[in-house]
Length: 311
Image (cartoon, rainbow, N blue to C red):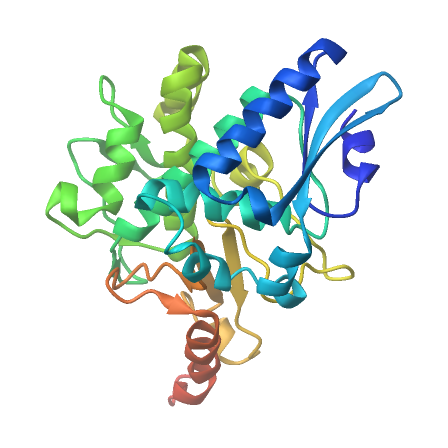
């Protein structure tokens, strides 16, 4: 089913529908939503049937592609500034338009999955925009009321507390009143996990309980976290376009310098795309990065590295 959705069209996103009778109702719902957001003139919305599978396919029309040449999604936010009624509606609209520009079709097996994906991306942008941490490659700290450190399994969630609250207080000084020391990789995992557990609290209490119990026993990190919760798009051989990002994306900026990248904390930088051509700044939330600023920062790591007598 996913393969059929993915290869149905070469651009945009597709939502699988249960049966033929559902098609027209869902199509009208989607078209009404797009009108309310003020973006119905930027998208093509079509119904398709093949191999006993029905789906709605949404893609960027010529006007949207002209606004975002070469899949550059940065101009979307500025274009929307005079269209949507409030910041939340504008963020939903920006996510939808960025997905509609996708050079590889993004498949959703159900409308519920699609709606959850939208909410999780919106939550990721919100919490990433509010996150500010203490940069210290030699320290790791968390709010003690929610987390306990173990040498074997890292920081574990305490019994009787909420994982969503523990994550938010570790990340957001507007809630905790403090900043905590993280690596950017672990911080990016916390950010994405927060978006997931917020959504689970709305739609799947059993799933939320399972995730909380996992973090009371052993935190999933690195590849364990990636393979359980995320999906990578693009490869070295077939990368995504340089300026194509959807709000809520988790992005890795690799330090290409062999010398400085050997220093702990300078291997590269994990960030969340928060829309409008900006990436979250985990160390100074008031000054998010542009693509050029983030690339320049990492480039200058190679220029500010020296070797002492101990190597």
